Image (tube, rainbow, N blue to C red):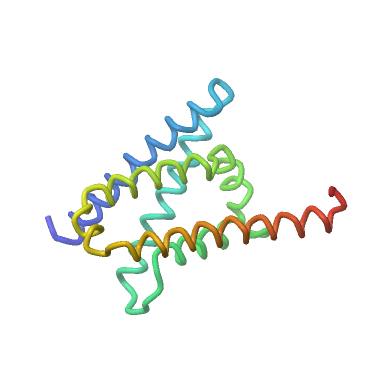
Length: 155
């Protein structure tokens, strides 16, 4: 088996495992309201977009990350006028980004936990950077929410 096929299979295995984790998380969040048929098809579409995006990134010499390709592919597949847009939207609306984010953050936390010695080398400066980023994100989100709610006349 060639290295490219082996690499693709490994990427696919990871995406499938993450998809199962997302579906379990989604079921834990909404319970019996989950339409399993649509949710599984929706996750399969997301996995297909993800694997195609990674392969485009690997094939092209451009320094564009895979998530940018995934965003572009998703946009093209869901733009009004695209023949598959209604189907893709119907199947993927079952999947909440909150559950995807939960799984991604869990995997990131495990990944960071395995590199604790590398993090120790960064010293106290990383804590300062993290605090500034957290505070900036919090206040930035609060300002945007305030402006939108005020513009809509809700507050």
